[in-house]
Image (cartoon, rainbow, N blue to C red; front, side, top):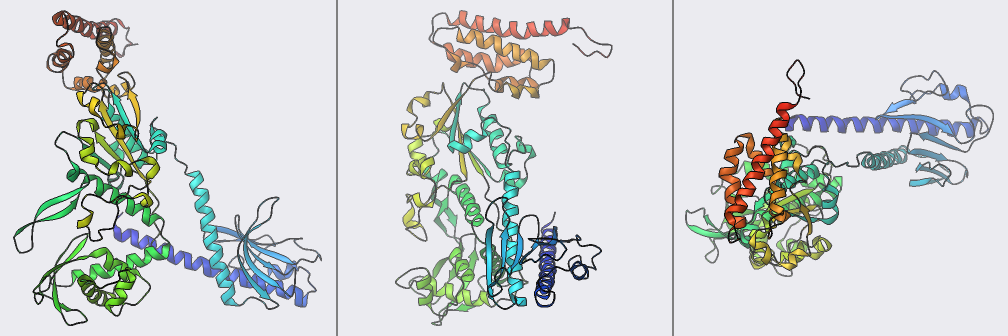
Length: 599
């Protein structure tokens, strides 16, 4: 679906909502008028004939006393707390849907009420909204207000129901472990499929249990999976932030502070979490401000169009990116190039106030003294605010989503050098903005006091080989912040399903036979077992090629320095050959049906 189609659908939905509210207002108006008629003209008695004659309860004349109307997908009807029909008195009536009712309460004729309430079986009703009326009947404005309240609470209850109905059922056995622990590390022998498992787990988490295969994910879901592989040269500037060379607008070389791969990823997750907690009104204001800014910058000439501050200082806009607006101030001998924080300008445009002087901007951002940047912010604010753009379509706050960051070979990097002060921030018990930390480059930020934190919707998966020598130096501060899960060679054998039969069965027996031989050698154990990832190479290799080019060199490293290295290697090779040859023989002896399928 294109963006234009999506916008049209949103606009259509908005129009449908307006129509539904208007129709329900008519229903409530008729209901109130009928209620008042009963008390004024009919001695407080219900009249079936009068009720059947109404126009709006069904959108046309009713054919029976039980007729109802569908408004905005909800079925409505009139109801009374004592009786349908007869001469019984009633004092309280409902325009009712399945979940929330609009109530006209006349139990006390001198203190009428119009309210929205939810019926709770054998319990006190939940009152969501209430308009005291005194002795008068509700005005059209009061009815419209109560109808708006009705839709709001009906939506909330439906969202709550949907959340229960949509409760995620994950496919990966470790999904709930990760969601509970926030940080996990898969450890085990090489080739046991730890990275394969990490990617499968990440796909399960970001797709809410729809699939464990990355290939099945949407582009948006894939964007919520981060991946990096640590190595000895990897450092803080790669992972968190650091100074990077850049070409300035005038062609000269300079440096600028840039976010590393992990900080960029976390910023994306934080934006989603922040937006999910905003009201519809705030989202609408931000969308309108963004539209105005886009229209403004699309229609100016960078370096050409001139603007003025309230003091008459002339400046031009040199360029813009996701974070800054770069301006040139030719008349300023001290600082002729200034960088403006684009998010501050967005905040001014979405604020419900009018900025007329620089001091208004200072107060807004809580700064006791003026800054050079704010004078330019104010000038651009005034230009952008008056910009006429198409009305922004209604926008619904996004749902909070899960983000998964995978660190492959986490033990191969120098952990303290890479994470720095993030040791504290990644701790599952210290997530969120209240536990932020100042980064090593905080003094270069637009706001030097801004702190970096990891939000609750970020989950981290690490992988590490148990036999790698770097395991011995793995930082203990990190060990207590991760949950370690051992993956044995046979645990992830499902990855071999990618092989065709009968090669798959031959591979399983071959792997089992070889690993049995490995664990029986003194000085070796299950940590040295060969995992399924090595045997997946049989999709393209023969068993002999896999042994000669991959397994034999690895096993020789295992046994180097042991007594009788040659004899041990011969036992390994014999076990390997015995495994797949035995499986091949079993397959050859298995009977087949007339179509050639073995049994």
